[in-house]
Length: 309
Image 1 (spheres, one colour):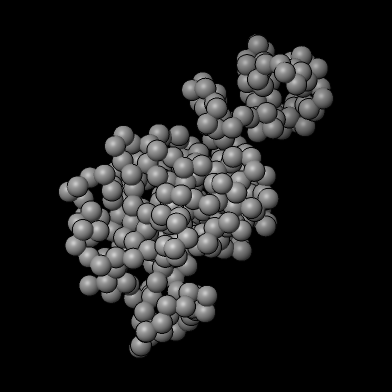
Image 2 (tube, rainbow, N blue to C red):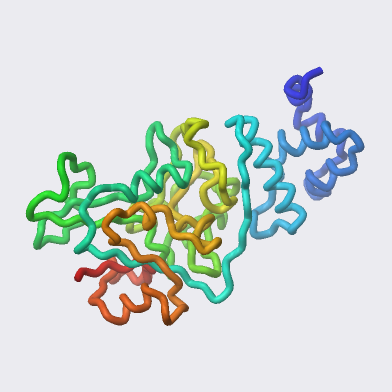
């Protein structure tokens, strides 16, 4: 009997009978570990593991390891590639922030494309975390700005303002979530546990920056385009019916790499860094440039600043 056929014959009801699980019983992984047949144990964990998985913040180190291994097997089966799923913790003494020089942004959207590829965003319909707004000089009406502009850029008498998750210090999206599927990490990055999200979209309604994206359909990622280096709280492939958002490329910056959008920017308009480091470039900008934050009157305390030369 093939492994695929074996999986089909394991029903949830039969699983509970075999393992003796009850509502207040042992975890799925602990119970499955009692089985001597490794193939059966792994099949059970892979087939129903997501249904019994606890909130990520409440998983023990062993449970985290089991969860990551299960996801890696799942993604390998789906995409026919070895996918690495990590759970790297926040770096100590680190609070990430971003600054963007509007004098240098030319509206090329290289940041948008790099973000889509790096973060395994759906290609059909394409989900984009970054929206580049084309705005006439002398105005600042974000509601009427054009983010569907076409043609050669930059256009005369216009400037360009990229908008993405502002990683608020006082994030309204976190407060709006009824199941605590989203929270703020110690390094200031607001994350989502995609397996805990119920898709109510309350966080999307609460965000004043249009930063949250909902998967109306099963995300489409061509296997040859898949970024196989992922993080549980960042760019691992998502499912239909859950929210997602920019995480400042958490899977990169916690390894002291640059976010994909900054690395791709051809004009050097983007500056990312540790706000707690007094010698960082972003701290120099905040101290020496005239900066502003979007919708600052809402008291969300964004950690994303804009400035001009």
